[in-house]
Length: 439
Ligand SMILES: [Fe+2]
Image (cartoon, rainbow, N blue to C red; front, side):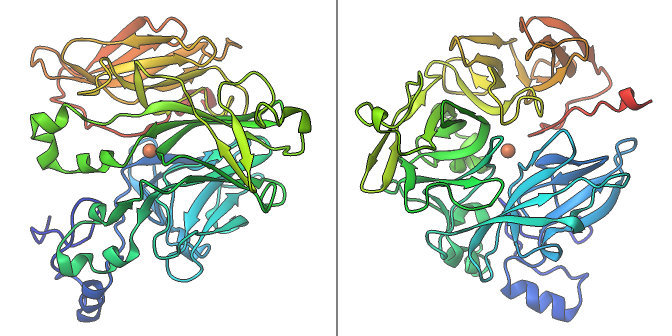
């Protein structure tokens, strides 16, 4: 803002001019290196590392912030802790404070790296204690897969290598061509989506020599995954193609015809058999137990079919009772949806993965944020708690409000109105932090 121009390349904007505040060498370097300087804008998600909170994006930069006043504290560069250039915006964290993340190294190595930050006893969470847990070579080092999250069960990691690819040649020439990073993705509709299944204890692939795959699918968010009957049950928000990325452009949002076909995800369930030696299951596929999703083996390829859970009501930005049910058998997903299955995204959805029924919150002119589940400390039920969502209305007579729903019935308990606020910033992901319990 001080020089009235874009000087750092972001996802949707390219820095055409070096920052005049930088030195001559820095400006020269930034002109030729599209990754330099790496944006330190971290608006996507929040990661708790024990008693610290970090804001993150998909770069290797994390910004710690103060919960009381939102001041920025320490900045962590993951590439100074390990050999990665970027990291997924959605790591996993366990109740004991352990954080599991995944990153990628573009400059040599060309591997996806799963890392772990162990909890420190009587000390602050610290990324310098990071441990490399597993390395997954990219199928094609010039076009690595785009990834935004990954799955973790009690014993396994699952990384999805999808046909949504990052074209490194396009990225390296982006500055010359004057195009933003979002234009540097390629969708390979004829490629399969591959599931890399790894042991959490050894970091080694499960059933080496076999490839788990499904048809081309674009996936940003994992809902949850767990183990049952010798399988890994994995639920994701899935798109048929990469059309979503066109909606990163303002021009698209200003085009009513394009907005009519706004792609939105449905919940896909895949069931990945871990024990491939179960001969009694070979006649009906490899999946034991009562699942609609199946898996067939052919020439060392385990092909997984999909169980499409939500054809009528689409759902994205999934949340569960986390971390209590993360990696464990669960029942409920909360998310943002679209009432008619397309068009603007303006409903909150509770998806029952047992009955396949949905509950919906909707109000005319209202645009809720991603729902956040907060457990009632006196309840043992998975959905015993409330849902929080920050809601904007396009009706000028309705002030922005924090909506509180009963997570079980999805009925409104109340709302906190903010009459002095014009409009909330539309957030992407949030978490609830129970600081009151400490005081
Ligand atoms: Fe996300």
